[in-house]
Amino acid sequence: MTTPNRGKSPAQLFRHLSAKWPAAFNPKAPMPLRIGIHHDIRVLDGELSDDELRRALRAYTSMPRYLARLSAGAVRVDLDGEPAGEVSDAEAASAKALLCARKNKEETKKTPEPRVPDAPPHKPKQTAVFNAKNTAGIVVETKRRRSFRKPMA
Image: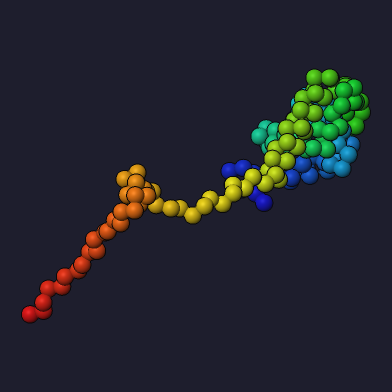
């Protein structure tokens, strides 16, 4: 579904990239991409705007499967699927931290909030004078309001 201000959805953009470069963009078994691969795509493909390319790569590289494959020393690939570098320890740690943060966020969403025990029914406050009078055996009377009607003329 396209919107006039956003253009194509990330899924449509990803399908475009995976159709052109299936060795690099495989959603079932994503491989770590070469650093700066967006420059290669920009040179070879002029169909996508800078914003569309950025959104497509962000959607692909933030997938949990992709992040799980970013382990230290893993081989990065270029558009043809050829080796083009390795994942550093810092990049692997960052990906692992991001996955853990997402997992913790999902767990907190799934965990039900603790229920507060039902409060006892509300009793009106009794003043100290009222309590003292009742404990002394004195009966306190209250006045009733009477409504007076005007006689009909």
